[in-house]
Image 1: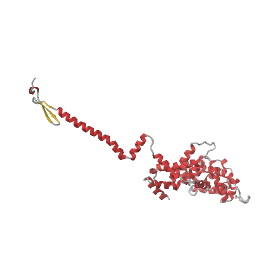
Image 2: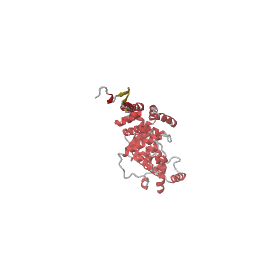
Image 3: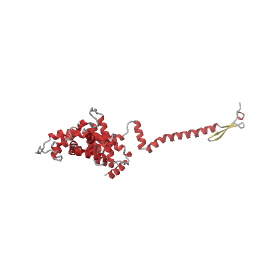
Image 4: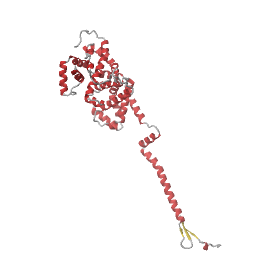
Length: 206
Length: 157
């Protein structure tokens, strides 16, 4: 895929619009998904995703192939998404990265105590949750949404996250900790409400 | 609990993301901490949900018009705005025509200059007088013209 991307980039750089269109079609959904995770709103995500490809087109000559083409376009989409959100951002007083003793309460028992905890692959419950993820994600501050999206969809490592976000590796780990904690708290609410499908309520994991 | 503050954030780490010392410390801590084991289990439960959910939303959307929308934005960026921008664009996109159009007045000016100089030289030659002797000879473009002196005036006055 990567070698094929480079071939398309080379053709697009020399003015081949069909090659550029092929690149757009190849990555449009994933770029949109990244943008959606950050900006929350579907129309804004569409806008950000399209603008990301426009910027790619404008700077095709600058792409040296040192990273994968997909990494490059996701990076542009991330920056555009963050810019879009920060224009409307309200700073939260409790928006800190450091992990403190008080943050360690509720050691995951919430999710584990639900039906999802006993059978994460239960189709009905999982479907219900997938439909609620967007709502849960929207409750997170922008920096937590962003780092979760980059970790989960782009699959960035701690090192890559540190470089992309301009923070230390330790901050990456603690920010992810807070982000996951908040996501689990939001999802727990949905998981407890979801039907159990006749599952024995006493059957809980440790 | 102090160890939990240090190791809980590491639970999310994938293979190779922790140093050997960090990995060993985390494993040792998990072996003795039920709370962090529960945190690790909770993370496994929801692992991949976010990615799956966002990609599912993307797949539900009709992306038919997306690439055309991108190309339309690119075209709008290409179209120049303002007189100077359009002029710049004309130079960039039609260099030969632009060069020719710029050269035409220059050539015309050169032609006028050559014509004027040529005509001026002829006039100068006409005015070149040979005052040797009595008769005056005027050089014209049609050849020398002898101007007779007053002594030569046949009518005499």
